[in-house]
Structure formats: C-alpha cells, structure tokens
Amino acid sequence: MHRFTAVIKRHHDDLPAYLIVPGELGDDYGKQGTFVVELVINGKEIGRRSIKPWGDGRWFLELTRKQCGQLDIQPGDVVSVDALPAVETPPELMSLIDQHNLGVRWRGLSDAQRRAFSEHIFDAKKESTRKSRLERTISWLRRHG
Image 1 (tube, rainbow, N blue to C red):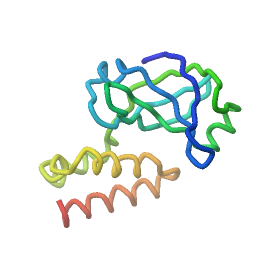
Image 2 (cartoon, rainbow, N blue to C red; image 1 turned 180 degrees about the horizontal axis):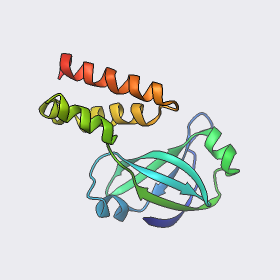
Image 3 (cartoon, one colour; image 1 turned 30 degrees about the vertical axis):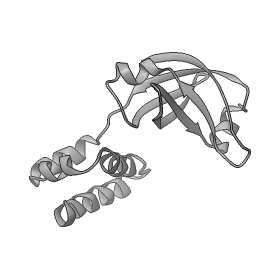
C-alpha cells in the first residue's frame, strides 16, 4: 500500500478534478502504462480507479464531480490517499480463459483491451450481470481473438 497526500486540482470547470500521484507508485508496482488500484481518500473507500501516466515519470488519477461531492472535497483541498494494488483480472475470467484454451488470444489483446474487459466485469453489481459479462467476454475472444 502507498500512502501520500495530494492537492485536488482542476484545469477547467468542465473537466474532472484530478490529483498527481507520486512517480514511485508506478515504479514500485512495475508499471509503465495505465493501471488500476483500490483507492481510499481521507479514510473513505472510493473503489477501483485507474492511475494514468502523465509523462516524465508522473502519474495522475481523475475524480468525478460525484466522487468529489461524496468526499466533500474540491480543487485546492489537500487529501490523504491510500492506493493498494488491485487484482488486474477477475479470477473467474482467467479460469474460463484457461478452460477454453484462450490464453494466447487473451495475451494478444492490448493492455487497454484486457483492462477494459476486466473492469467491465468488476463493475457488475449483481452476480447474474457478472456471469453474463464473463460469458460475453469468452464469446468475443472466441470470435475475435
């Protein structure tokens, strides 16, 4: 887990708020591109959020207006942040990929494609939705991978 403080920023009123993430976070996790963490801000769990590279060893993450409102924070506020490594791929998806011999196809996708499929599954609120998304992912891999 990484703990740091950051200032909430916003370039323009029409854009999401964001905060700068210390460069060593990506280094410690061995990342060079976008990756997902479990995020806690000011002691409140935010859930899975993407940390994105900004160049020159810097990273950032966006916060929606809704998240800022739930946290009662605004641009200029200093916040305490805990970032924990997140599971990158749902275990049941990996199991299905193995069962259907789709590992080569899965690894052939870009990091962004694998992350998009995984996050779509993680975002499911109901078990039936999660199962349906798993089945559609496997079906897509069979057809397109």
